[in-house]
Length: 343
Image 1 (cartoon, rainbow, N blue to C red):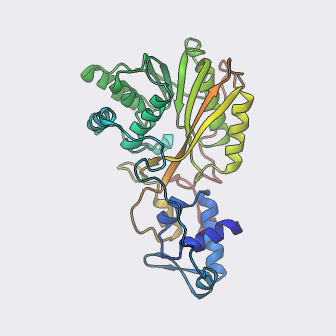
Image 2 (image 1 turned 60 degrees about the horizontal axis):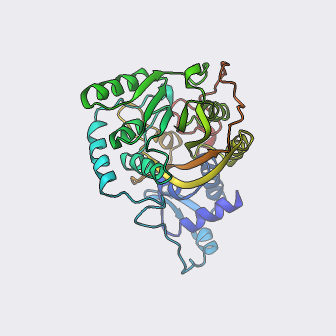
Image 3 (image 1 turned 45 degrees about the vertical axis):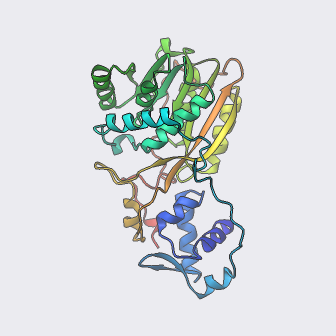
């Protein structure tokens, strides 16, 4: 906590909003809020109209700012891929097709990544030769990665498993109107995995629930779908998935005979205000200043490979209970009571 408090003080060398801080601090939201509360109580910062500001004690702590800076690459924004003309064409078409997409539902804790980051994701996958002539399964697809993949014309097969029938209807309509070859099956990850999907795919992709049971089951189902030497992609935040969960995920992958090949921080950005749900309302609940608009909710992209045959740790033939909300870490969920974090 002391390290985080020090980082916040240095960030507040100039006044910043809550979103500004969350965008640059790689800590769970709950830890950032706790640190802000302690710094205010200790007389280092104050809540101002434009966000948080240092007061005399805080200014004394931050005596100088180093002249050395290390900036993220402006061309790729730290993603390691830059879109070429062909992928930019896919991006333009993708934006047109998803305009009438189903809006997120808080029932499924949905939200979708920015369109540019969807295309960056498939460009990253293609860089590793994980798209062309591959059979790809997506467990959950409110991001509509399947649509972007289909627009390239590269995959051999694209199969979407999702509990939300609205996504299925949308994909079926696109298949009819634009000839996109995307299979859809309504599927709840807590249920048995259909036998014909087991060991049937080259690549698995998902943005899993970030409860411990959700992470285990989403990744477990995905690994069960993979053939020998298969590949997986998934996103994981820090904001609502503590490093305790990261460690559990890494251990799970290792025990599944998988090796993590890539971890790209802040790869995907998510809007947090939609027509149907507002995931930024927690700031209002807490009486915190939230001025300014910026992309603050981000997930890290993981890529892993199976070394030969995967070791199946989550029985694909067994129904498993999945916790959908972590009341200690999913602070953006509209149903949670956050009084404990109020300043």
